Amino acid sequence: MSQAAIETLLPEVAELIVSALNLDMCPEEIEADAPLFGDGLGLDSIDVLEIALVISKKYGFQLKSDNEDNIRIFSSLRALATYIASQRTQ
Image: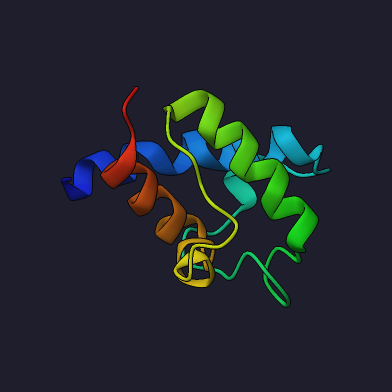
């Protein structure tokens, strides 16, 4: 997976997050390296389930709730885009 592929995915994944969660913000407002939880975007575990469902439909792989890497995968927009780039089948 190239850095260019990840950079290309960032706005696409940001749009998915905003759309899936009906956030009152523009996808461009999500900083690539800002935390998705807590002080960053403020997501919670229910939000992650929604995002995981949309990602699995769009990119053709499952994000499992028992994956011990989920904290890292969902730590930021860039981390999520990097994981998608490494796993996607579509």
